[in-house]
Length: 250
Image 1 (cartoon, helix red, strand yellow):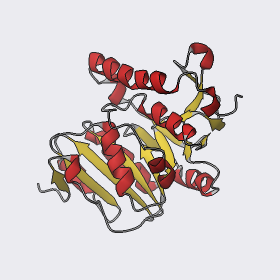
Image 2 (spheres, helix red, strand yellow):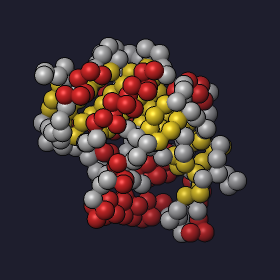
Image 3 (cartoon, one colour):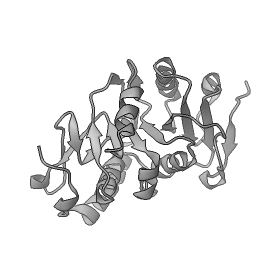
């Protein structure tokens, strides 16, 4: 069965997904468990209008036939056959998006309703650079080693389960760290970069659910902990003690 999307060896070979412009673009990275990816993307299509595009980067060479069915006029898929890390892939989608707002979304996240409109409405107020579903305040008493979820309101960091961004602000802040080959804690690092660049972040309750998070539970534990630690060590080295960049405590 032939598939109707492009394959590149390296992420640096990618120049564009589409010339079309959209109100917003959902960005998804995957390297396995493509059935979850299909379900996640289909939930976006069921709960959004055609002015919301979907970009998917697939890292490596998993079986791709099940992906062909999701490609359409607003869903664009790119395979990087030699592999690409999470941070570099998301940055490429962010920079190549033809939308003022993007939503970084994990394949384990499922839309149970229209979660996109509330995020875009909040971003359109131009008070916040990032609006997301889960996040919180850095626990300074814990030496910046944990994040406390305080619910709806202004926060220091947002997680990449469902993370809406002002595209221009995200790029100006330096986007995600390309050294983050694994997702975990890379979103925390980015949130603090955004705060340091005077960006503000807002957490919302949204009609979303999360299935099994394969990126965490089904990743080799040694690799997961090694890469997570590398990501968090960068956070501690760069930001710990800089309380002036944090949002108001609540």
